[in-house]
Length: 129
Image 1: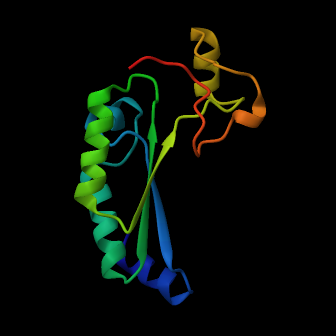
Image 2: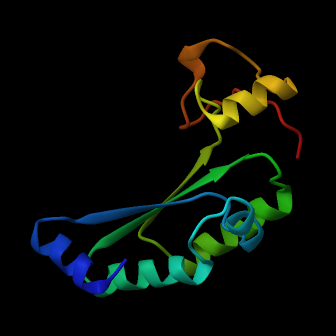
């Protein structure tokens, strides 16, 4: 993210920029081969503020390998970057995704009632932290 890009977005009528972070840990970023760092994320929020835009940070909780400690680390990171809005979503193994295949293989699926598959509140995957 760059300040000139964000300024153009604001000029075009953008009011809010949403950023998605999975677990906000260095280990996760390296394991998942994400091409960003926590510092990149901090900078994106800072630049968004400088451009006069609101920011929203999304985090996914409950991905394979996550622990209670990594969830706490993500919460601390969310507090540190202080976006205007924050949302923590439950990892949802939607059919066709790698997470679904892993959950199916490991026996983590709690239901196959597809009406329950949404990231806003219902957990359909039973994985112990």
